Image (spheres, rainbow, N blue to C red):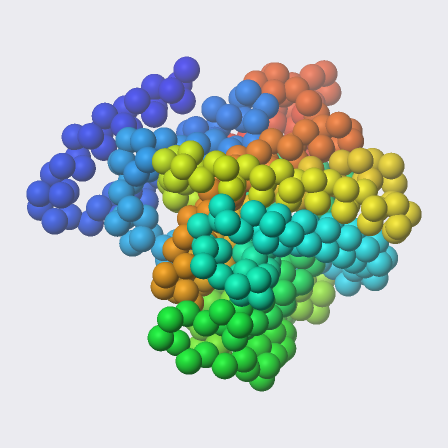
Length: 460
């Protein structure tokens, strides 16, 4: 009840203050940023009380307070807060890379690659086939030849198969799950980012060559694509080495240093014309595996603490981008894509897990952690919208509608997977906080030891 009262008070205050800011030309984006931190976090806590992932609460808060419903956060404000999303993606990428340990990669690399290869291949082929067969009903494939339709369908599918390291890391941080299903899912999601970036870069280059945008004179440049990929790895490795040196010889002000790393890494990637996600992913991996002792872990914890409010706003802004009208209008295209993608992930993961000799729990439940989509897919869809001024916005709208469904279903399914596999306590947070004999507050099953529900890392 306390959270509901807080939300009502926040909403009333925004209704009173927002008109004053508009009249005076005040900083609405800063006001919206503070409002989203408080409001989305409160909704996330409410969701957690009912046994739902807090990420779902953040998304719902963004949808409810965004342009589609109450319009407390306007489209203009969402655009002005875009740097928050860029910072969040950089933080997510670095944290994702830091979760990859070389010993674990060597031990489970074959299993992860087999699962990933199977589910990505089946999902990709299924989505491309569906779009080509139904191209007469797909808005962005109208008036295209079969070859052009294949190229544009492949470009769309290269985005549609993207997973969400943000949601995966947020759920694992929230639940404290570290079992086989959790670790395998995380491994697949992280390696998938590298594979999808490679696939997307090639698909975009191929689509521009086969179906160029009107007025563009783009030619296929394998050198540019190669640099975007290999350059990301080289720049990321160099950045990771510098961070490791800082941790070895300085190791002070880690919270501030964590934010600087994310900003600095993203800027370097942009200046070097390489992929930001892959660059920071590599930097996190190198930092974790080169640093001595627990220095890498200390930086990761500092980054989790500093990134908590950024992640809350990031997911809330993702929810605000969900256009309810567009999702409803494109249902005849969106729902088949969502269904084919889910089936491809489901059966592709099963085939890959059997091929790799994974445990029955991994074979049965890992696919449920691969449904989510969020920031990376949104970012790639925006790249396509810029590359294709006419068809691109339609591709983005369809993709955002697909993402809207997947980012809502995904966290719920992943939590169910962790519960069914016995890696998370199924009881709602309201029961866990009462504690059981021998347990302190906030240290019930499913909670990371020593972390109370309200601590910053848990908010991510």
